Image 1 (cartoon, rainbow, N blue to C red):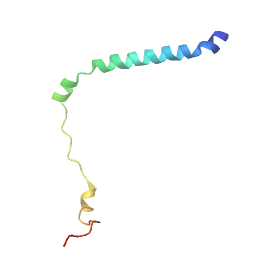
Image 2: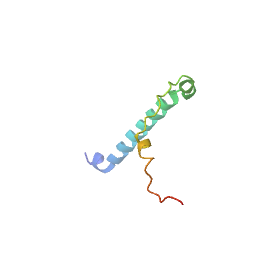
Image 3: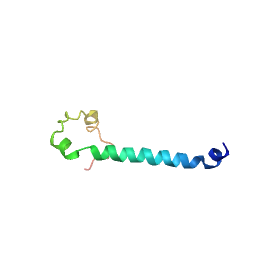
Length: 62
């Protein structure tokens, strides 16, 4: 048990390396060119700020 108390941080580092390796492998599997070729069209963005564009806080130029 003394070994785990003193060197437990090594286990944490090994786990982190394993997680990062799995993430890297999963990201390499993604084919971004195929996704970009077949990506779905997004619906138009509905913006509610267009109502606020009429009233302007800036002083009017004369």
